[in-house]
Length: 226
Image 1 (tube, rainbow, N blue to C red):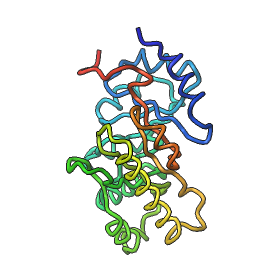
Image 2: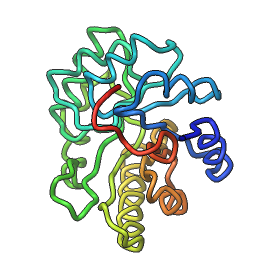
Image 3: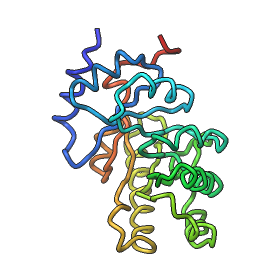
Image 4: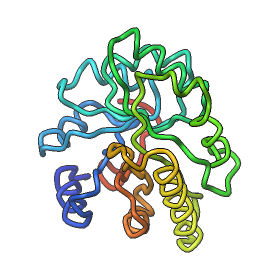
C-alpha cells in the first residue's frame, strides 16, 4: 500500500527547501492527488493536456499546475486560462502560439525552454544555437505574454549516473550561458528543472531548482486512469 503523505514528507526532508517539487500525477486518480494536496503540497505536473483538463475541473483552484510533457500547439488554448507553468517549450513556434493565446486570455504564462540533453533521440528540445536564434529574433522581442523563467531537460534513461550527471551539468551550463547573455538583470530567469524519481539527488547536486517526482510519491505509473 502506497503511503502518499509519508512519501511526500520523506522527500521534503531529503530535498532542500530551495528546490521545488513537482508531484507528477500522470495516470493517477484525483483521489491520490487530493491526498497529496491535503499534506499542504500544491505543485503538480501532468504530461497530457486532456488528462490535465479533466483533473483541473475536479480539484481545488489553488493547485499550481505544470505541463511537463510535449505540447501540441493546437492544444495551448485549453491550458492558458489556468496553467501556472509550461515547462516543455521545445520550439519557437510553440512559444509564439503560447504568447498569442495568452494575450487573448489576458494572462502572462511562465515558461521553461526545454533542451535536448539526453543521448536518446526520442526526447524533444532545443539546442543552444536554436535558443540563441529564438531570443535574437524580432518575433521573440514582440512577445509580451510569456515569461521565460529558465530551462528544463530530461536525462537519458540509464543506470549510469555519471552520464546523467554530465547531462545535468550541460543543462546548467546552458542556463548560465543564457542568463549571462540575455537575462543578467532579470531575476525570474532562475529555474533549472531537471531530475526525476530515479536521479533527483544527482540533479539537486548539479543545481536543479525544480524536480519532477512521480513514482516516489504516488507509486508506479498506472496504464490508465481509474
